[in-house]
Length: 326
Ligand code: SF4
Figure 1 (cartoon, rainbow, N blue to C red):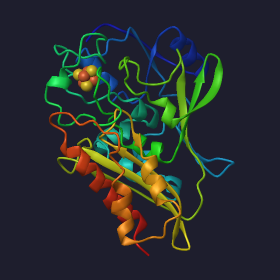
Figure 2: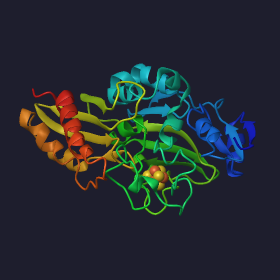
Figure 3: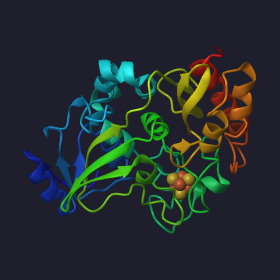
Figure 4: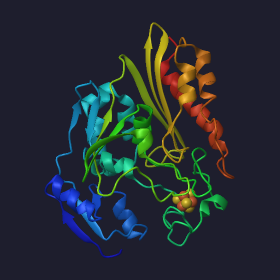
């Protein structure tokens, strides 16, 4: 591990000042410390923000839900408001990592976590995300778990977060605080596709701090849920996943929010699937027809062609589970 300085911020102002000087924020540390041990990450200065007052879940004036950046994954998953208003968020969190990690890891850290591409974590391998310009070992290497959507010639790594898939589906907003004040960024704009700069992963300005994630109010009743398909049933990342929320009235789908995980370089919103659903009556034949659009635009690699069909089936199954057919 490379040497680094460590400061504990007592106030938000202290944290922002340290962040502006180039300090890296750390809270649960469940990803960053691992990466530092492997010398994948070599920050000069860490700023511990775990004592800041960003650990509340609250209902907003507009009827949405705001989850503080320092709420742990297990606290958010178990929170009565999250469970009742947005089960898809709660389920995505509960299907993530292990109980021990969920007790430490925070919501802010969860959406900031870095890819599980094995070449990224192997400092002897070429990786444009870790060392810009060095190449991408995954393109010609073993790429079974890599992305089929949103890829570029520079990087094909998936984003690993499950909660981020639920947030993308629900069109959440990320609340940020920086030296220039507060701002909000739509979730779809916060996590960046790799393009030519896979080392740049979030739309963060220097020194900015995530203060929370806001899930907007959606029409009620709202049925929602998360399905994760993986090689083993616990402590494993998604091969494919689907976050689905449906507002159904009078047997007709009035709103549909759908996103996929395990397949995109960022959590992958599925607007073509949503459009196929809205205005339709619930029926057994609807789910497969809508899910047929889930892999539109995909570019499979040598070892992950199976994800195209698996993604469609994952979305179809979760649409059927959430929507039923009555
Ligand atoms: Fe690095 Fe991305 Fe290629 Fe993986 S897929 S080796 S993270 S550039």
